[in-house]
Image 1 (tube, rainbow, N blue to C red):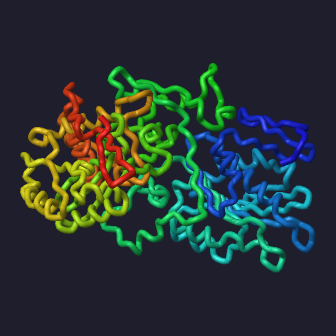
Image 2: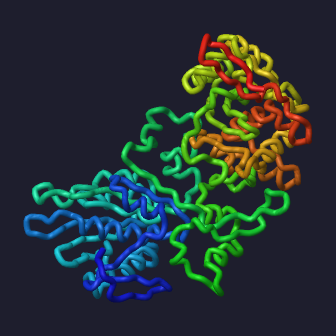
Image 3: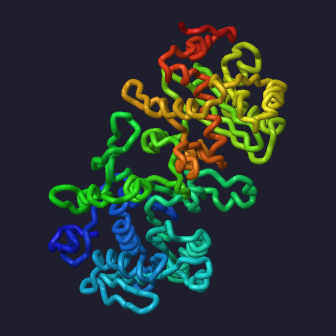
Length: 533
């Protein structure tokens, strides 16, 4: 926002450089922050840890767009902006303080402390009206009536209802009016710390699954629109694990964290390391580790699961030279998980879930899914050329009497051309199943984790992130058992898939069945198949 720095201003430990005309010079400290500002998407949302620089960036993005507005007939670059928090005390104590740090009244004009709070920036040929509004309830939609703005900034968006966001977003771009040249850029900015998984934003971004039974017409409003962009910053800290490789015993600063140059230090230690003292892991995960947290307060079953480590950045594709494993859980909420074991590393590729349906309906659904996403594997399997191209493992017949119709389910799957083998776990022992998954999550192969989950597996991702948790009562009596909820079925399917591939044997030091995990090499002539030994 200017060239040569002339003066600096110190406030709360920060140093803001300004050019000769008093305009702030801003340099985003981090690749995600820079990517956000380089984007011109109409709607942009950024999620990050506390003190990660998102608020300052949004302030500067408003000013930058105001400076880039084409002049109107009178030669003035006019824009109008709305800045939203959930309450006026929050606006005054946090958002406005950050705003005035960048745009002090002595350089940009008087700030009006009435309602709504208003600041009209005046600098050269730039005139930008900025309104600060408190919106925390869908009934506040009335405050937006007839309001025409260039754009919005939703600060701490985790407290904003979707109805308000939708209504406000629809009103961006109507100032300046078309007769005066219209808005050069218009849109909505949003920043937030990681919300709980029942917030509407993770639902839209695919980070959590749709609720069971949600109708298709209701799901439509939660589809991420084409052209919108979503940015996620790295966590502020790195977890340090104990000798068991599971228990978090401490934290260290993440060198990839953003905005570190602006984080205060106490005795040379960045404030992040002081802030976490006395806080729950749930609080640290949300505010510092930047993780979507479950809305429940139960203890996660797989504490070993770390999103940054175990979830791929892009959708994963199948490797046709390796078998496909399918783990199945039956019942009225059936689930299927598809993955491959490649060079002793698990790549979990896809999932299918059902609600209030039986095997006769679910089996054909899974078969269509395989045909669409794994055509090479299904073609070899269905054609009888390679019966182990796809390997199905399901809930074994055992002491769980809720599976009294299990054999019927197995027969239905066989009738659909998919023969399911019971997962090799004696009496369907839950501890063995849970430890098999934990064993894989803790494992490393050639310096990289043994488990990698495709981000397209939304239900399984939410389950492993904490949706699959121990019930409070079982924890109290010292016999923790997973809560039966909408995440437990997909978690069970994962367990059966891993156990079917031999992870239970590896866990106790036995050899994995080797004949079924060797890669298949396809000859390019005469459709023949040979094994690579």
